[in-house]
Length: 72
Image (cartoon, rainbow, N blue to C red):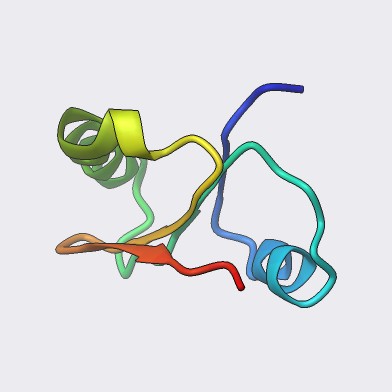
């Protein structure tokens, strides 16, 4: 599929970095507050600032930052 996965599951990092699992993009949410309205606000901010850079990337987001992880 040609979808970007949004997850809070750490196992996806393992699959992508260690097992070299193919993907079209992963957004890994490391939030202290996992309420729905917080998730929506964080994703809206990410999409507003970085939507063109998300495909084929592994992105870690928190309430205050977004980090694009380097895949080696």
